[in-house]
Figure 1 (tube, rainbow, N blue to C red):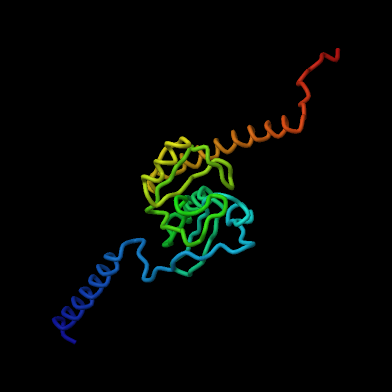
Figure 2 (figure 1 turned 45 degrees about the vertical axis):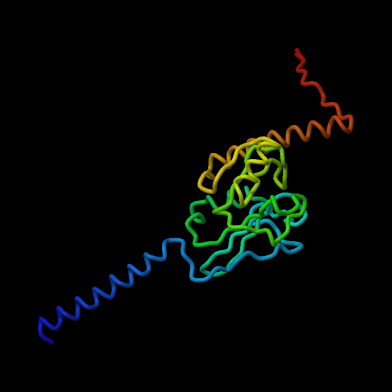
Length: 203
């Protein structure tokens, strides 16, 4: 093979390689060939994070479907899903993420037909609406619906891009305060009096 023929062949292979790379780049880092869509929450499904039975708990649920193998991870709350998704080994996965549109389905028992794309959803944090994990990250397909909850029950509206570790820490802090207040309420309801913290000098 002459040097000229070799050069032409090598340039041809290089062109094909560049063309294939460009085609691949056009699809984008999170692109998938086929949309899997959400699946139903079945009786007995356990939360991928906390292990609680999902359908027995109120509030918006979530699920992640991995594009590469169709593995499905289900969560009893949007915040449990977020805590899993934000882990470094997970947040770059090619995956579809779904949450309930609370504007269209009962809070106490959300319906599977009202699962929406989590990345295009709007979220309310800081409202008085409580779910599976206490204070909730409430999901909506429309920003106006999210704002309506804020107007009625407090909080603020966030987009998917706003959801980060600071939001998780805020939810965790609110959950701790909620648990403390709930415990105090139960003690009062049942007439439980905590012993005084008195320290007597034994000498």
